Image (cartoon, rainbow, N blue to C red; front, side, top):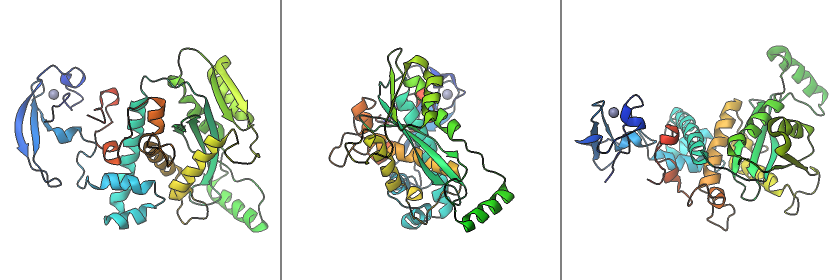
Length: 335
Ligand SMILES: [Zn+2]
């Protein structure tokens, strides 16, 4: 039997500090989307009523049964339109569910990491993609814990198109810049934001070891953020990308992100129209990769389990179960 842990209304004093028996039972209702009746409760302080459903992440969803399947599709190299066809719902439904799932994934990740320390070492690299067309490239810094391939953070920032261009491409780039203005590169800001996410995860002392390629930006930002604690280990980016390569974990992580996310596949018809959508998709991928999927195909141990952040692997249904938008007061995903 479900026992509400707190009043779900943020303005109520029983939200932060619920007393014992802060609620009374208040009958049942029959939701259209579920076969069984759901118990209702009434708060003794604010007198408002709520139900078990108020604590669920799919609160107010008309089709909550889509969520776990949709999560699986979003890490199976399926585009949003194809996901809508497969689930037999409108494209708009899938688009809304995509934004909701990304917000939920970010909250879930943040809540699991609250108060934790991760010792590292860490690895960082940027992969490149684009938004809308090839004249609007983006950089995607990805930060992992080296031993477990736990995805700590990722970001997306705009880049200006560089590299060798054919005469036709130069003309198209000039036309594009005449129309939209010269595109600013924001690689440094994106890397700083991603590395900055390590701040609250570090213990009180000890070195912060970061593996990366030789890009000087990483050293500058790491020293600026973490000072003497920052230990930068540089490795050749041109060495053969096999298991012997010291950067194998981050290379492999980025290769897997390209494999899972349709919009990151090379030579694909799928493309990010706006970089914010790519950032949202990465949050969804991290939810699945860290908390559900085994580190390799041969193990059920997830990166989060290996790091001691969670007790076991979650099923997709559990990942999208309880709401995670109340910070530290969010329900335990295994409750
Ligand atoms: Zn209340």
